[in-house]
Length: 55
Image 1 (cartoon, helix red, strand yellow):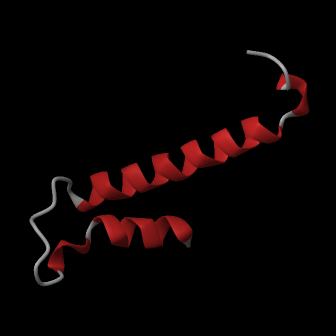
Image 2: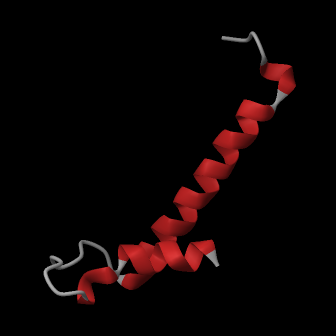
């Protein structure tokens, strides 16, 4: 459900006063899915106790 909300946010070009989008609806959805996956991976890395102290 969160992916669909992000997709809608990225394609809200139909609202008055919003400029023409730089991405098609399919591209916007793909970006939303990639962003969501990227945030999940980053948060999992932060919680991994085996990487503490490694620079």
